[in-house]
Length: 457
Image 1 (cartoon, one colour):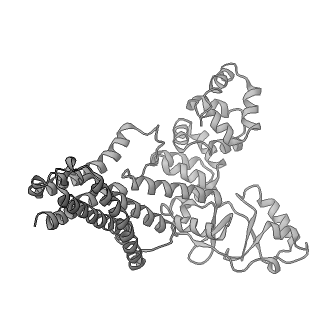
Image 2 (image 1 turned 135 degrees about the horizontal axis):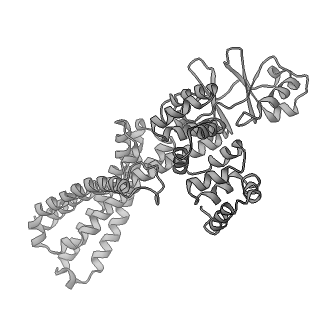
């Protein structure tokens, strides 16, 4: 969050050219704190503050900025300066930035980047979006199997400055095939003369480079790893995914699911900074589709107009009945979508899910039906315009309709995510508004069909 109280002081330091104070700000505080305190500055002001630290420190602070500010700073800086910043950034972080820049900007920057970095960037950019390769870093430490522990520690000391983490060190052969893993903890405790071969773990959990990032996150969570090696088709290590990358993946995937279930779709922009037209387009499109679908409730009500005219009291309970279906359907859709995201169920488990939700829908329907029955029975007769026997029959109809609609909503809400997944769509598209709209229309048909059978026969 931007520190509004500090902004005037920062601008005053810039105006007075307080080199000592700005240098202390850039070098003595945590990079995340510096990023928070300088976020409210303009692009030009931020670059002036950055001038008071070395390029490595600048890159550390830069990586904590929101992605949109990174883009603004990248496009607002000279190509030579930005190319040096890209060289200093963490490999995975700079790829995230470059993916957000216009292609022509990227192509103008890459020729100015060192050849080794340029090749690494192009390799990482070539991996499919949302794959393990797209979120991994190529900054990792490796050892060979023939080293002693003493030699390995010396080798590791040389690699530590360029590796993102040294807590896990991966053992490779001459062709970089992944043959084992040793932790820093094991290296420190082992005898200096012991061979890496004797202390390494030979069974290494890894993920293929084209694995989905959600699967990578699930694997790391399951084994409680700090990092996970990424290998190609020939089991050669090509990078690692670290815990901070996984946190970003989890937040990203959870955000996408939440937005889709809210009928908004994906959105990478900051809510308060997103262009008005972007928000309007994302929200109006889905709402328009739902609005058109809701018009079928008018058609359904018109079809049962005769029933409504004969028993006016039926119209009083329409909101009660259809909201029951929407609520139960949305609840079921949320539970199933979440379970699918956690890999607790798959589309192939549809029969087990149906059995489970059928029983649950019946139990919930009977519960709500009983409440609906009591509500009608306690409603004053003058409000309904019905006699005692008619009021009892109406209570029975409402109870039966609520139970049936609740069961129907539960089955629809639990089925749609599975169907969407089977068809290749994200289950999150089976959003609460979508389920509620569908169940609203069909709920009216169920309600008046039951009423017609019992009250208008």
